[in-house]
Length: 315
Image 1 (cartoon, rainbow, N blue to C red):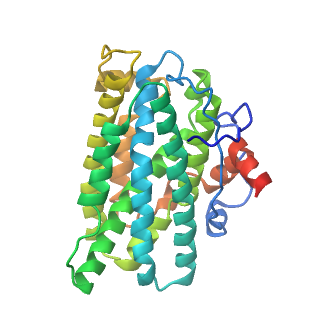
Image 2 (image 1 turned 120 degrees about the vertical axis):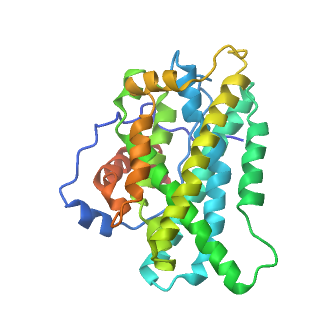
């Protein structure tokens, strides 16, 4: 059931957060990752929370289909990796990452419950996502200790590549005034920007863990080569599923790349070309996630987010 504590009526508009004065590297290095136990009230969320934009709404809604199972899987993989960590600071960062991702999963799960109450049943697609993470990407029985260690590191590399894209999406959400111009639902905007800010905040953890366990370049390439195409495939299928399952559309609206590009140019979706370029940047030798997004901006939004402020007040 959706949690009932409401957030403030209005989310902070994109680009309204002032940059902090400290240099970016110092801000990032001083971060202490802590879970923020946010609450959202979805009682008034319309099915098309971007007014008159069902395709943009449902393309973003794919997040709610993928993230509950995906982020629970992230948590499981990182818990399995904890005994392999030899650096105490990294261990603390991983524990903070685990706490944040667990809350992310629950926040997006509540949106799925709300969609079901509005007549859009997400469960058939979610069952497929669950099968992927639990059976295909889950534990492999019968492995030797050496094989199990290798399996854990391989899955950490997979998480690191996915986290690169979630940080890209988080940075986009923090810098997406088109959603404000379109009068998107303020509670959903706060969810997207709170989550996006935390993704930017912890954007280096999965990458640093991967490099700690295996500093080789090949592991990074393999993680992106597997996760990038899979993520695109799941997103396209998810958008098609939601548009077909939307009871108000009755199957009349079909997604297309041309339409997605048109919507992206209006600032309602991330630009597909920039998404591809972001994935290619990840493959550069010497790349590090701190080159993406701004920790200062993320912390600025988290200081003003209605949900995060309410969580801090009740903490």
